[in-house]
Image (cartoon, rainbow, N blue to C red; front, top):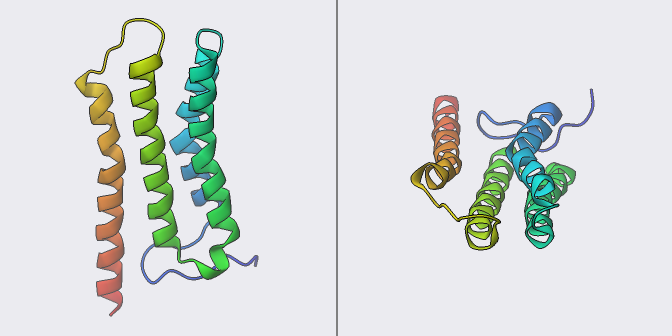
Length: 133
């Protein structure tokens, strides 16, 4: 069996498919948006592409350091990076995007998925640690 990294104290464990699936799933929309904006607004597109690639670079770095890093804090760091990238993307599109800017509630509310997931994962981890004790 391949080495999976430092074991987690709770419910989260290192898993290649879960880690990279979550990472790519959380950032694919940024890369797609950057590619779609490339013909209309190249500078904005490059910024958004960079914002899509930054959490992926962090994810690869965390994965490579999994031998000394527990999976739960690593997942929270990755989610935090994705949240920052999403917020900066929304602000950049609002400020520099082509067309009439619209910063409506649904786009702002979509950012709530990140703290919501972080909270759910926190309670799952805490519950698993409590059950194990």
